[in-house]
View 1 (tube, one colour):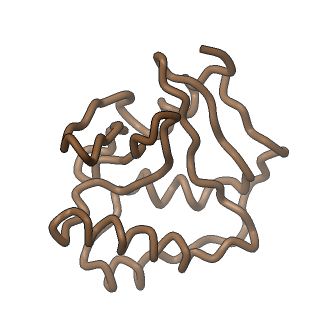
View 2 (cartoon, helix red, strand yellow; view 1 turned 90 degrees about the vertical axis):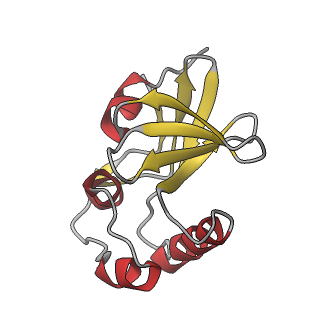
Length: 133
């Protein structure tokens, strides 16, 4: 069971990702768009295996431009490519990313240039996060 801080509520206003996709020169995996357009929530975190995971919040007043800037920085640090989309952080500083081709969720160790698949999808990750290790 994952931890939602505050009650998640179904979104009625949706982010349009077309402009961001054009600016970044990519098409987002549909699961990333669904993640940001399904519910409002402040924090979503928990454990999977022995990893503490904290995912991006989705808040009514949050500026999607801030997330766009995060993506630009990630792209600049990855040879100007967005093969993976950052979606959160792991307790030891690894980056939680979504594979932009198949939607799997991975932990990225940027310094070692390694990836570990931790879930087949964002939905599966969220439903399998636990409160305790």
